[in-house]
Image 1 (cartoon, helix red, strand yellow):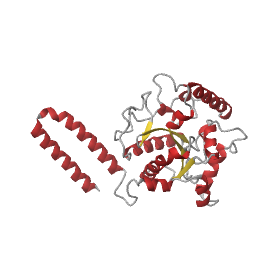
Image 2 (tube, helix red, strand yellow):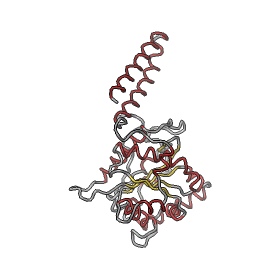
Image 3 (spheres, rainbow, N blue to C red):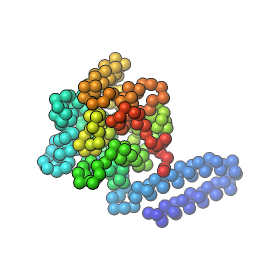
Length: 314
């Protein structure tokens, strides 16, 4: 793989020299910018180890085969397997079994489960940023987005990771947050479609949102490290992926949006052991970035994306 990468860089450099000789120095700035983009993409691909035995990102059909509906999960994984246990623990939270008798504030996710509109994906390991997990999710997302519209208005992809219970020192909130954003950054390098022109890549922009396969979406993270903010607690690391179009179709008027937000926030006040996060309360304020909602903290302090852009290598 490294040999092919080197040859590729030499080839591109050769094209640069020939183009400059032909068209003059006025082309240098434009060509260098293009070359830098190519370099960054090649470096990102090489870092993810595409030459190893895990292979590259799979096809749409392979992705569809990776994602499972609830009956498929229950048929494939017997009680006692970590996948079945993680699935049942997550469902217990949605249905209000895991935290007293309080209903989970995201009532739309519970509706999605009852309507059989959720898909599930199970990672290879606890760290989502591992290259094999990033490749798995990239392939699964391609398959999921191909069937999401036909699934229903509450469609969601639930990504679950195995637990590591014998770790000498438990993972902290900062550990999970770092792993998540590195995962998101690496996932961006595997996207086969360009970032949408109408969405800025600056993660601090109030118009930014996560995109994959050209589709704007939202990802929310739940972890075992969350103690006070129970709406973000799960026994296994859980990443919930939702296409943004479902919110547009479910809440297609301002009245519906306001009503849903009020209902969910009222439930959050009763469910969590800490006041509503400022990253939730400030979502309509100028200068607010949706990136801050991906990984909410137990403390009531903002949690922005640590990267100014997910598309820049490094």
